[in-house]
Length: 329
Image (cartoon, rainbow, N blue to C red; front, side):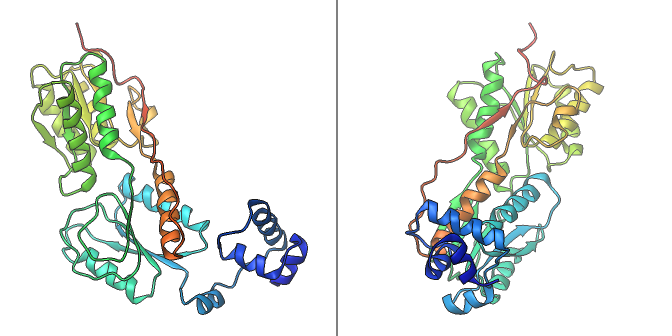
């Protein structure tokens, strides 16, 4: 199928078809819709190899991501893949390994060698500066490592604000303070959630209890729960992810502490199992797909040297279920 056939069906010129399929500006919404509908009806696919030769770009975006099955990083990577389908760019993913000091630098170098037009850094661990000069636009999802690039864009799930909302929810219920089971502090996300918890307590003049640092696993949440169950005055706990919250609840119940009658618990992520544990878990939901779409849109605009679209950020989505209640009388 040729572009001339798409042009004939849509009632436009071949040049207009080319502009629409290359996602160029200054095409009306109605014309763009007619061209895309005609292309879909005819099963027309733009030849990306030819387009790359004409534009000097490979029409590919590189992604640096931590190789892990943890819910947050894995969900964000899936969101990036979904968002990329609508951009006309192929994805090239290079995974890093936690604890490898050259992981991000090596991944970036590999992607640059492949000639990608832009790079997404979805690396959640703080391993220090990246000693690689990057000559294409970069999108950072989360807190950025230090590197040199012509343009650095960012999109975030606003973990600080989400952690603050989770803590505020417990304070609003009447708890005098909120304990925190944090994630490993080498992770940007764990740092953001710890800061959000502290900000909420400080804003309400609530005392800041000692922090229990876990490793994102239910086992580490269980260990923290065993200690918290023996700590006087604990009535509310915010865990930095749902897995740790689930382990925490198990430990509290085993030691005779009722949830939420004695201790309220809030998690973070809204994993698929969260509504089905006993009690159903109050948590905050991360907008992975929305952040990926926003970020990819910014990156593609930067690659194609178009004006960057306005971004409004994502609202905090607190999911209140049965694991939280006012403190015991």
